[in-house]
Length: 115
Length: 113
Image (cartoon, rainbow over all chains, first blue to last red; front, side, top):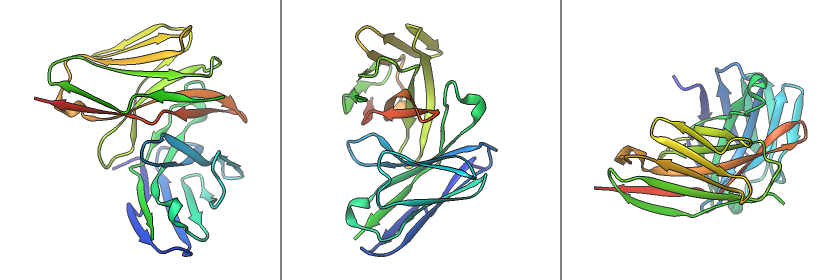
């Protein structure tokens, strides 16, 4: 079974709709991240969380919100989706013990299309 | 500023060596990474190198770091069709109490017979 799972894997929605992407991990890691990937660009950080009570904005947080419901769950919401939020979204986790190397483990991604 | 650049596409013949190059701008980076993304999958960490090293070898993979020129390369020996994927270079940048990763746009490696 995968250590980092994301649901849904694919989603098509319309402008203005509220969307939630979910991420779960069984690695027991304390840190979780949300990234988006656009064609021809690298991954850009949206939000990150060091633990359940510690949530921080990344470089492109506008238009997004997150919730860390438990150590193993980190969800990303688009309150009112717009077409330029069409992208591939990745969740990742890391552990404080890997802080020196910051090895991050990625989920399979969610492909979101906003029409 | 923080920026990581890599060429977008590389095509090699099966059995040849592949060399994927990357340049970065942050001289304070402590670690540099190579991730692999196969179709429909997330990113998989291939290897990383600490900034005070200039080479790291792991089976078919060789990482070379030229810190003076801020140049990182990944060499894959005896490239196989299963190596076809997108390869991302990333540098770490200490920010807000954690190592922020800055990714390049990725190099798509195509392996042909």
